[in-house]
Image (cartoon, rainbow, N blue to C red; front, side, top):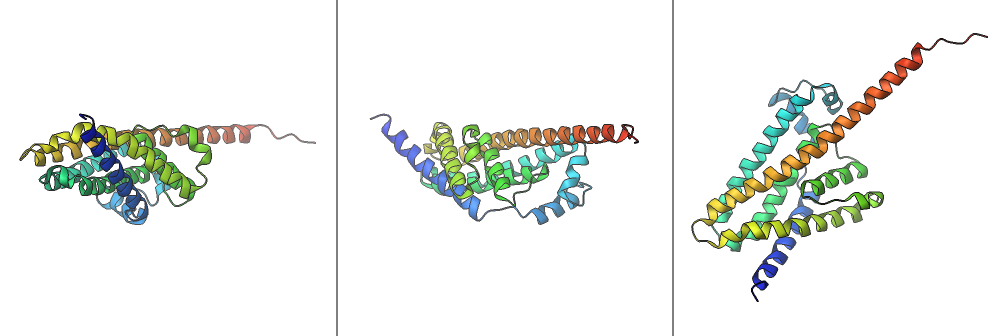
Length: 232
């Protein structure tokens, strides 16, 4: 019987995360054009398009990434403090909003490291990053990601199942009267921080891999061009 309340709560949390992430997938999307303007105006990133991010020093991107994560953390903390006043009663709407904040942070990090999400493949990669941020390994299912309308819901379900266990362990403190607001703020802050930093590492590694590949191709082309031309 002792495990029943936790099991019931986990089911509610998992459903809330599935709904929140699904809503984030369909409606809460960062506009790449507006974000590009924000990068230039607010963060002073000297680029005309996302391709230009691959010519900047990686530490410059990392500084902006950390700022984006901090912004998401602060927003999540404010939201958690407000809805945290309701204790466990407001955990479902809280997780819905938190899912949107978290996915927008992941989307911004994706764009920052030069990865847009216009095609099905790019959308799939975005959700693979979100799964990685949640600690879910989707490597076995990568071959099936071409059917995006089936792939994304499966990823969302896997993320929700994984995250719900973590959430229930930590969000249990919200049953404490008065302290639930502070606990809600702190937990939301921690949630976005953890996901943000794991997503950053995912996109950073992909970015560096593409840079290395481009450099190798450029060196190969230069080497090929320097070879003497045979004459007949």
